[in-house]
Image 1 (spheres, one colour):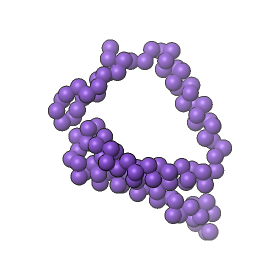
Image 2 (cartoon, one colour):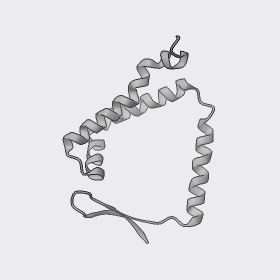
Image 3 (cartoon, one colour):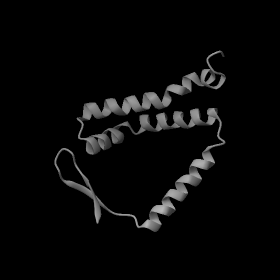
Length: 107
């Protein structure tokens, strides 16, 4: 059975996907577990830097992210841009507080 991506605004089927087989699902879950394990030893500084890069990407791709949010959630373009800006702000928030996060509140 196909999985359908339906526009919340128009009800139009935007895209269809085939379900994963049990084997495909197990392989995907195994890859995700391996990836998660590889991130375990990363430092807080590396996490902060990764979130900063995500914020940079969201800023660079603000228009396309806004379009995606409009399509996925049926939000107005203005609301979608605001949501993208909020995600960008939250992703980049730690960048300016890196020392405080790494050292803790007592500094």
